[in-house]
View 1 (cartoon, rainbow, N blue to C red):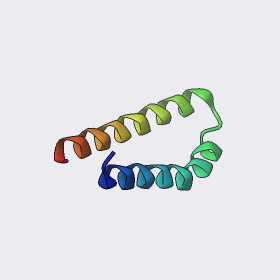
View 2 (spheres, rainbow, N blue to C red; view 1 turned 120 degrees about the vertical axis):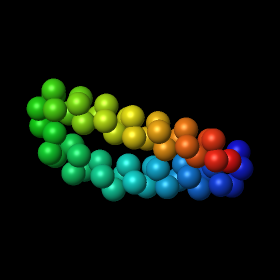
View 3 (tube, one colour; view 1 turned 90 degrees about the horizontal axis):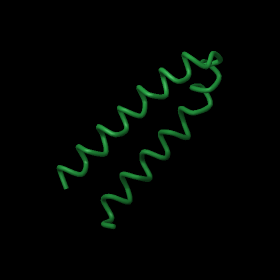
Length: 55
């Protein structure tokens, strides 16, 4: 892996660590949790694809 890819992965993990506690506390219903989780998954996948295309 290149240094830029490693830094991008570290950044995504850091963002996940920052938002995870609030995300879990506000999504107490399973249906809402799965909906929000799928939205975040799509966002992260889009960011990964963009980073892959740029580099």
